[in-house]
Length: 91
Image (cartoon, rainbow, N blue to C red):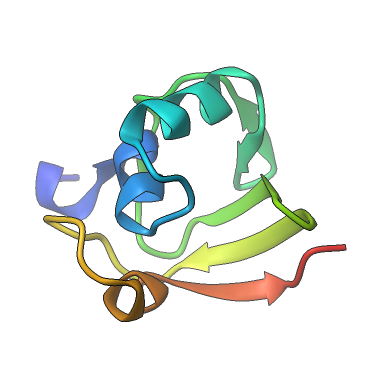
């Protein structure tokens, strides 16, 4: 795997606009609030690939989503929404 096919979990969450600041994304992961492919992680530097499935805490509950793309920079909300698809909405 090359670096272009993987991205840090906290960076991806920030690019996908799940939190306002990257540090908040890192804290979410460090607190155990995100699972990658059903495996719990507390490492913000965990690497994501396209196709990975994330289970995480959202404002309204637990959401399950699939990573569709990686991003080089943080874009607007429409661009961010294109980085993932929701498999199971918040419950």
